[in-house]
Length: 563
Image (spheres, rainbow, N blue to C red):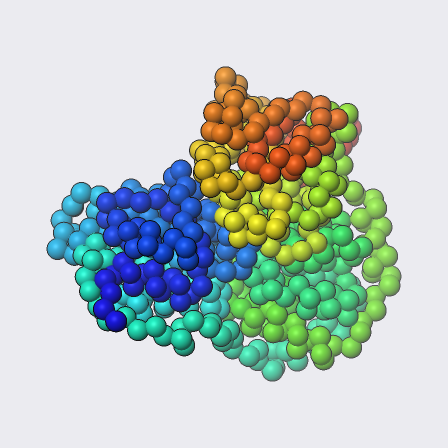
């Protein structure tokens, strides 16, 4: 049948079972929005307050559901406003398709009004991108974009379409072969598998480190079985949260700069580190030369480019995590390491995470959310202290329940992501944990939540400073608080109410539970402004460039000062 380009875009989205699009209209993309209007019963459009919010919402939707997130933006500044969200998705391997419109083909390259080479701008931060200047190639391009976004190691793909293409006519044929996406993973190499099995069976003190690849691969069941057979402690990276049940006895917590001492020491002491779907971020390894110094390292990853990129491995298995673990589980005899497991148990008991309970603190708020929800909630975060506390003090027992900007560290990410996550998983309670500095960056998305009736609960850990930066200034810059103090007259409760949401302020530990329960019961977007101390810090911490075994706490600092 003959359809215009805009109608072809929408039909292709329907082919891919897209049910929600996040975006913001403008002149160049008006034709697509006109077609979307005619299909509003099939595809819901969420009008965000800013294009960056649209990209973050699409990202949050993808993380919570495992589907491809989709966002729209117009040419010029509309497209460039997506860049931070696209980069966030790229760094964390999140499947997203960003569809932008550009000026007409005859105006390209002439510095036309709101023209930008968005394909050129986003080339380093997309898995692939396209500019479509021929309507006859439009359908196949969109289909390819979705296939690339979700295959292998996922990532964002951008499709830029000139305005004349959105109006031009072409023949469209529904292609059933493009609808059902078959996972096409290369089978792991037999020699690599055999080497992995031999390393595991020779190990006496193994440790498992889990990254985001285990979440992306939907490998939680296989991972649980593998850990059971291996009889080993498990730590995770920030991106790996929820892949392994955080309530299990052999879970030691997060690893790295703000990881638990138990995890950092277990990795330092182990003789085999099995790394599953993780990329050895600098925040995980600390000083690479002193990372897991006694261990052989076995890395399992779908992306060959990650092998030996940051840390030299002893051996590796290239393949989808779920597939590799399934094979290893069938072949691996049950292992037993009672003495090692007892050592790790003692480390957990000796070095628990602690915080002050006599005053209102970030950890106290997050533990109360965990207690009230029983862990059955999706937690999104901003970046900084709020992010680390949410990673440390909420026990994630299921994958796709912790959504955060891990690689890029994007302040302003969480609120948009929480809206996307709640739309993708309406059955789940969704909390966004923010510091006041992060919340200011995209707090206008509260209006989006209200307008679209998305009942997210925004928790602001309000210390009136840029908390993590101030923490570094305290510890490493002699307390020179350059540009990190936010003492001003901004009232987040009034701001919430002005945008149509509920708002409340709490200052004491006993006020936390009533505020959370009221927010849940209301079924409305709610902002809870939690006033905490400006000098609260995230511990443990590893000094920049230090070894992870050198993680310290406030007690360690106090002890050192009095020596």
